[in-house]
Length: 65
Image (tube, rainbow, N blue to C red; front, top):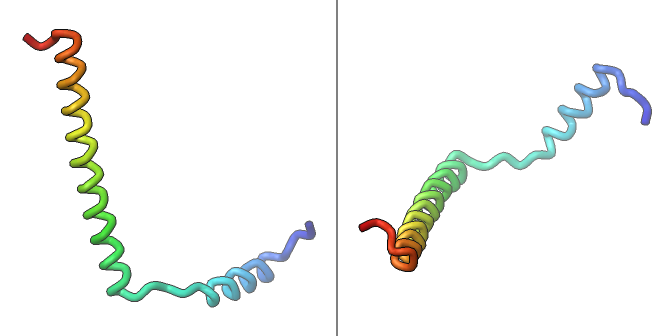
């Protein structure tokens, strides 16, 4: 693989960046909101799963009182 000069590298990077389709502000905001919603749902699910498993283990082993 031949080494490209720094100027050639910059030209190639600019050429590739021009091919990128950037999301609009609305799309970015919607995607960000969906990430927060899904992270919250996942956190609640794992909290509930942890509570159920903890309850089951305590019930089986007779721990916690």
